[in-house]
Length: 172
Image (tube, rainbow, N blue to C red; front, side):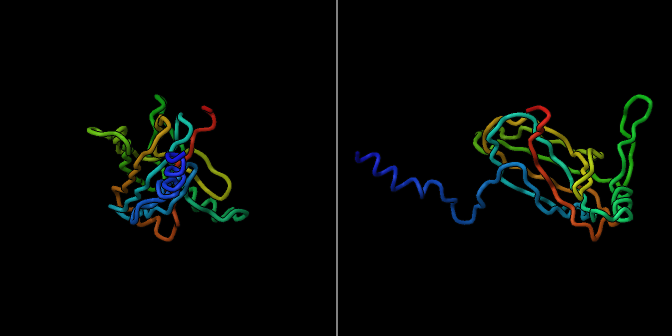
């Protein structure tokens, strides 16, 4: 009985984040990302409850029911254009993102993913044009995600671009 009472007393303390440390979030999530500025960085702690492929995207907002705004944002975001061999061709404002995924519980080499990617168009709708940075297979656990913009893109000034993480529902 004493151990149960001690656990009930300590449980709220164990669930409270340490001062100065933001509590981890679960996908799907979206956070502002000033991708138009070289060196701009997003860092977050992520808790993955369900393993599987997770998608890392840039979300370009447009005003729904405004075809002119949609065309403007779609031109900036680019299209999914490939050559005869299926190689993606540059389209829209060029961007380059350094994405790092680290296992927050591991010791030693914690990096599970560390690549530089040029995002390409993935989808559009619901007020956003989605550019896929990449996807990664994540097992249940805690991760530190870091995305850094490597290239200045002044054409995107004024757009409130977001970094998004979601579980790939097609693979569920």
